[in-house]
Image (cartoon, rainbow, N blue to C red; front, side):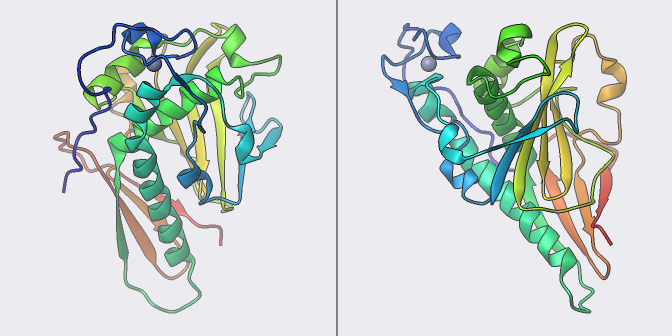
Length: 268
Ligand SMILES: [Zn+2]
C-alpha cells in the first residue's frame, strides 16, 4: 500500500502577493488575510493530555503548554489552508502509535500481532510545518532565548518539500536509539540545534514512548552515513510488550533492498 503524495501548494494561479507575517511569503503566493489558527491543530492536540517543549540540550527543563497558547499569526489563510491536510496525517499516525502501544501493553495472554499503517512522508511534512510554527511563534528556545532570534533556519528545504510533497534524503525521520521506556499520553518537542554553528537542524518529537528526530537541515553533518543508518526511515516499528507485539508499518514509496526494522520495548 502507498499513501497518495500530498499536494500542499495553494490552489489556482499564484497571487504574486507576499504577506509580511507569513513565513512562506517568499513563494509570493499569499492571501491578504493572516490566519490566527493553531499551528498544531486542535484535532492533534485533543488526542493528548498534555504538551511540553524542551530547550536544548535534551532533558533540560520542560515547559508545559496549554493548547490555547499555540496560536500565532504566522501563516496567511491561503498557505494555512494549503498545509491543513497534514493535520489529518498526523492524527492518524498518532492514533496508530497510541493503539499499537495500548495493544502491546494489554494485560491479557493474547499473543497475536496486530498491524498498523502510517504515512511516513505525511508525518515528516507535518513535523516540518510544526517546526516552523514553533520557531516562528518563538516557542522553541535554547538556554538563552528563542531559537528564532539566534539561529539560522534553512527555509528552502521546506519550500521544496511543501511543493513536491516529499522531504528529500537524507532529511526526514530518524528514530532515536533510546526508544521505549515510559509511556505517557503527551506530546513533546525539542529543537535539534548545533550551538557552535548557531544552526537549527530539525525537531525532536516525543510521542508514546518513541523519540523521533526529524532532520530538516543536514549541512555540516555526515550526510553519507545519515541515510544508510538503520534508524533512518524505518519501514517497521515493532512495539513489544510482555506478551505480544504491535507492528507499525511506516509506508514509504522508495525502493529499498533493506528492510529497516526497529523495536521499541515497552517498560517492563
Ligand atoms: Zn502566505
